[in-house]
Image (cartoon, rainbow, N blue to C red):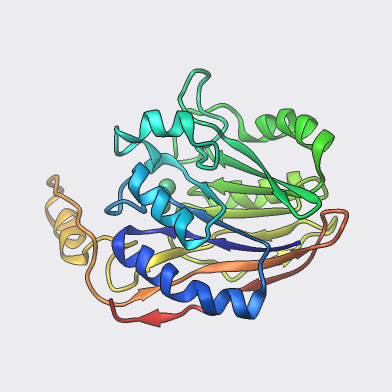
Length: 260
Ligand SMILES: [Fe+2]
Ligand SMILES: [Fe+2]
């Protein structure tokens, strides 16, 4: 099974570069599945039904997310009805939205799971134990399992990669918007990268207009964050899984630049 995983899509520039790059990426990598993190897809903060539908229209199969998924309140009922948009599983019970999606891929099934880290993130349930609990369920249905681990601390993401090694097929980190160069196959066959990076404007600060962020650091005053102008970059990985759900290849996608 061939999968493309894209980092946090940031605002309109992020959606634009993904839309423009996908035909060529499809041609080169022949993916069966495309998974993308959409927590910043609507104006840099959150997701709306309209924007999610735009992403599905481009051919993205499952949208994962993280802390910013809650930014646009109108998304709450949509999270309840659209099973292909995931919020992290280890939020408190009763929070809206699904967190695990089983996607039919040819004769196989791919489980896509969203988790959030806790370090510098918030008081969530333990993502390690949540994974154990859900793995018991997922492994009954499939050995093809993708986890988007949305976290700030590299240590927590790396620890989770090792923890899930041999159980998850792929663990990709998201949230920092900065791609790491450590993509590899762990000892028991799990494809791993600490952070996919961002699909969005590169001349800002994590997608946000740099002047706004610099002012925030200089003055410590609250400021309205806006999407950065200028060129965008696409970041993500391609992975290939064998029949047993082990990763046989993980490659960083070439970061494509274009002027938005
Ligand atoms: Fe993000
Ligand atoms: Fe995030």
